[in-house]
Image 1 (spheres, rainbow, N blue to C red):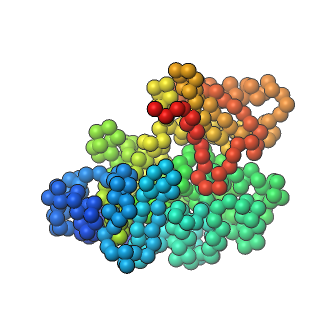
Image 2: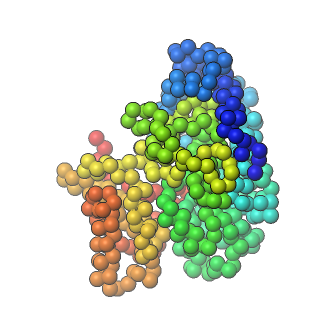
Image 3: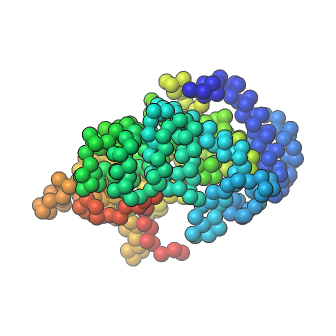
Amino acid sequence: MTAVETVPREELEKLQLARLRETVGHALKTPFYSRRLGRIGISRPEDIESLEDLKKIPYTSKDDLRSAFPYGMLSMPLDDVVRLHASSGTTGTPTVIYHNQHDLDAWTALSARSILCTGARRRDVFQNMMTYGLFTGGLGLHYGAEAAGLLVIPASSGNTKRQFKLMRDFGTTVVHATPSYMLHLASRMEAEGIRLEDLALKKALVGAEPHSEDIRRKIEELFSIDVYNSYGLSEMNGPGVAFECVFKQGMHVWEDNYIMEIIDRENLEQVEDGEYGELVLTTLCRQATPLLRYRTRDITAVYPDQCPCGRTHRRIQRFTGRTDDMLIINGVNVFPSQIEEVIMAMPEIGTNYQIVVQKMGALDKLIVKTEVGKNIFTDDTRDLKALSSRIAENLKVSISINPTVELHEPGFLPVAEGKAVRVLDQRPRM
């Protein structure tokens, strides 16, 4: 554990203020922030006199990043930039984040800290099953694991047969993957002739998808390992923004690198610790693309107490969803995570599910498709009908909507190699 992880809060806030001033200095060199900050009377770093002054600065949104495409958020000449990451941009203008070498070194150090706080050590073999490329998930923890001294296998995503071979041949002890891919691996073990005793696996670091505590427990039970939740987003570098420690009681936001705010989604005012709201982050150690008060759209809450591990960096709770993931079904607000929490708590359910929303006349129809365990899927339709009715009733109690539940045999639903596509909203766009 590094000294900065246990630094007293007063000293941590002094460090944040110094780094915030540096960040504002870099932001003033960008076309976007030079205009925005100038309008509120901030023209030099010294205009930030306290951390409270951050609240004078307007929020930054994904739309701002898109409007500034391609170079409006860049604070330095391209000659000084060594890498960029971007969203896919398949439905519009992508969001782009640039890094100079300082930024990559800081990100690597943060990723290494994150991996080590889960108890991983130099003797571990780290198999990275996240996609490499413009998506930050693969490269982000790759360099962090190397810096932490782990042996890294850059397997990338997909090709399950090869993943198992690599795990068995090299004695993989730690994997990095999406929770949905971990569940897929578990469902393929028997078909690939893999037994738990063939593997040396001890830990899984999962992220890139919102997932419930029941999903974590299911993965832990299927593999007899510890599973650690992580959080990151490309606008804040990628993985390594927040990570669980060995106590698994919330994710530590590394506050020497980020200023964290939780705001009410309606009035945009900051809420008290323990209250749910939207997470807002400000970068403190990135020079090429500084972001001030970025609205992540992710919904969480801050734990009001300190973690038993002794770290002073505050922890956030498991995300309940995203403001832009929320479904409005016949006037009722529903988060996909609410549905996952219900179905994954049922032992009969398998490792894959999908939520479909359709329009039936003037009303919306919610269809929940889920695979069931191979021992449950039998020829006795009465058993399946009873299970379907029980799932529907449990969901109705949780989300106040009566869904249609479809049960399928294992392997029926599609499996994504990257982030799982859990929701298909097939309603006509207005």
